[in-house]
Amino acid sequence: MTGLSAGAAPPMTRALLAWWEVHGRKDHALKPWMFTKNGRWPEPHEHLDVLQCWIAEVMLQQTQLSVVLPYWERWMAVFPTLDALAAASLEQVRLQWQGLGYYSRARRLHEAAQLLLGRPWPRTLAGWMALPGIGRTTAGSILSSSFNLRLPILDGNVKRVLARLTAHPRPPARDAAMFWFWSEALLDPLRPRDTNQALMDLGATVCTPRNPDCGRCPWQSSCAAYAAGDPTSWPMSDAQKPLPFQVICVGVVFNAQGELLIDQRLEKGLLGGLWEFPGGKLEEGETIETCIARELQEELGIAVTVGAELITVDHAYSHKKLRFVVHLCTWVSGDPQPLASQQVRWVRPEELKNFPFPAANARIIEALLGSLG
Ligand code: SF4
Image (cartoon, rainbow, N blue to C red):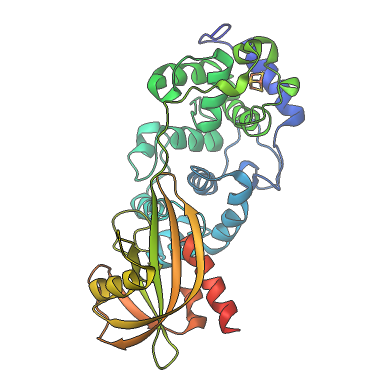
């Protein structure tokens, strides 16, 4: 990349920071964890609250700023100190995370809080990366945000901006070392915190995935993708296969007392430890009704009568698309057993809010409560 070498801040960084001073998301209402206790953007020598930066960075790992903000505010109100987080149960932690997705992040945050208890905050990349759920970008973000340490970041926004700036001919993941070098070379030696924030803000607000606003970009004159005339051709990606699609048949089972059956997923794997309504994959040649009856027999050891459809919910994960077809059912016989889950419970509809459910199940609950009036 032209103009990037270690040492003093390159002219490109100066242009970036000048743009950011005017147009960056330096707003207390957007990133409260980036401000001092008295509400100022920190000077280079000032430190920020590490707990607040850490929680924000983990929430931001796969989620946009606007989505994260209300979760972060609620989280900090419930767990304002490391002690409070470490002392909470995993269930309480999951409940605060509910809706943010990628639930293993919540479990790892909780584990990391217990490991950090009684120790000073780590001041090195290695110290943070030794904790569960913390990679190099998250560690660099936490340390540059809270202590203004000179450490680069390489999240999706930064990768995209750098890939366009250089019109890099291969997917960033294949040349990670080169991208890390570029990100580091861009850091202003005195203002790494501000440089990282400016890079993220540029990626999130100007050099966006589908509509880069090159006319407002401080790097337009040095950008190879802009010069090529089609910035959205970068970053290059390996050809992607279509996501696998599955139909999941779900039973909302009532007993004679008006209680509902829910089960807690096994701890390992996607959505581990969350609660859900029982069900499973539709097999070839099955109807939805026979699938539900079979799954409930196999996974809970119960027989049910399958009634009317409650709702169909489509949900896309990063690696597959699922369609949940949900039917109301009536329990007939058999004591429910956790044959494929951690535990099963009969609960009253109004108690559902006390259990953390994945996003697709939250829509099922909404439809259910609506149908019960
Ligand atoms: S000029 Fe356009 S493509 Fe290049 S970095 Fe700026 S916004 Fe992105």
